[in-house]
Image (tube, rainbow, N blue to C red; front, side, top):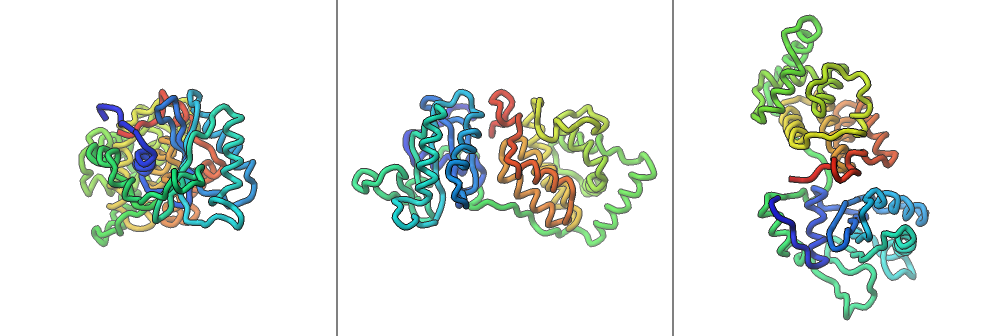
Length: 339
């Protein structure tokens, strides 16, 4: 983007959220740090399901503290759950714990809004005269949303990862298996070279190259090398690459990462069922490095649906399930910036 977005109202912030997440959240808490009057980092988590309000609030404060220059935060609660009996708003106890904890941490909650499937309103105000219920159209019809769309931004109506069903030649699986045999017993196919060419050229992959690359990704050792070369193109093996997997101490070429994800998506459409798991996992891993854990988790789930027990997807699920955020995503100088 060539200029900064002008945000002048809560509706503008609410229209910004799905664009930055890539989907319209549901049953979620979405925090955005504030740096003076500027928006900072965005954090989405599932709406809490337990009664440990203090623990939830502490965890949110710890995440927000990763933005070391933040001096405040705002919150959007997306839910259709009604308020509990005797409560003024949904998640009232959690909200009170969040306010208290963030105040103590030096990143006070400046404002909060409730967004349902039918309307939105201020979550900190109980007076309908000064804080009326607003229609969702005031979000989607606003100037900022129009500006984001004009700049080429879009988002899905709901979270979820879907790819079209395979519609290629019936013998594609046999072709992939044959290419895998060639990989094992000859040097005719140079996987890293084909992979780097596909990423660097940014052109559609030919059916022949797609088959060869799909065969490469079916072999775990070679798959690991191809994953590493997205970040470090000159790598010839995956030894000692754990820091790449978790995103620690790296400065990715994010344009290359975007192209790699696009190439993976193209290969997925060329892959029959049970051959897609490696590509789904690679997309999920690169999305995790970008700090988009929700979308990453969807890809790991899809990989495990394609190949139950797929170990790399299980490993990445464990990393995300432990609440880990890629270190590269927590550093403003190295983190991904949506183009």
